[in-house]
Length: 196
Length: 117
Length: 107
Image 1 (tube, rainbow over the protein chains, first blue to last red):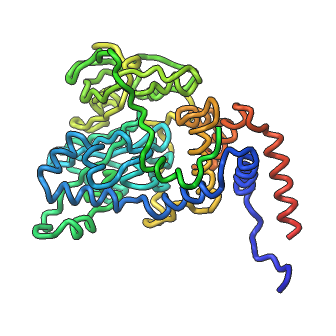
Image 2: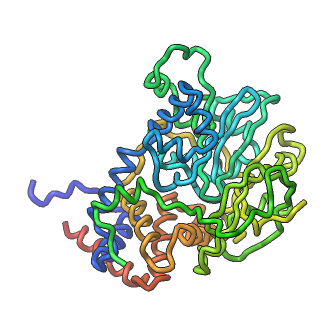
Image 3: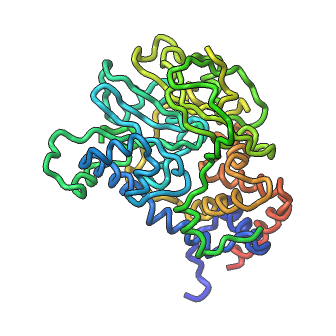
């Protein structure tokens, strides 16, 4: 039907963003086509499958794992991943004695090149405030129970160092190739709120 | 200033823009294993030293290198790069006896956030 | 600054909101736009950088900070960075929003 408007009214935020985009484009400061590319990269090209490939290689190749723990940025670049919010990486390894979990209490810092953009829960006030003080209670909400004898290390990303957790390889994964191993690795495991 | 053209975006996204800077003759004040205490600073401007760590004792776990100093950079006062350290705080030192006896928290802290213990 | 954003260890925020396990990267198109705009603005606007962008979020009124969604906070940050730099004024933005709203209502 001509003139029939199927669109919901746009929210205040949507209108403000559109206004700002137009004003900045009119001043030659942003190119909307460049914004399109950026949105597409983070919606479709950059995500946790990247980090899973890094983890799977570390599980398969001891020499790579040593390099990853020594110079994570270089090792991750060897696998083909690099970029903004991941220029200076540190990988922290889960062991029988130590479980690692990552947060940014002050904002939402997260290793974009290997995990993509953070999920809503990682950016939530509840996670930011509580995981530093009561990691066991927060991990239990994720159905992950860490024994009292295990040392929990919480890494608060207060600078531009970005942390990735190397989860423990599942016990029943012998003989799997890298691709199959990567399929076992979850985003939550690489943040530290899941075992793998 | 001018807009990033669409063709430039991938190179920028995947190339990144590190905050690491050359040491330029600076030497770190602290080494791995050194005891430190986070200063009780209360900046009105930008800082990356959370309130929960101020005045608390820790141990240097990593010397991360020299990085842009946000307290300065955010306020238009220049990059003022300094050595950055990962400092380990025992959970009980931060949160009292309710915290796990073995648990710990790591924060990345710049030189000027720290005093020797 | 000892602002509301410095929330490590604060009590009272309740359970971590788990939500959908596989969620969209951007829940609304405007979130993706402001994400990309913030990156460009932090890179090229005088006085702007990632640290200034974070500080702009920290300076949001505490009640507004807590009520805003994540990307709404980025929107406020971008507005601060571009108005502080003199790229445009709050009035410029408000006028354009009003014009867009009128245009949408005419459709």
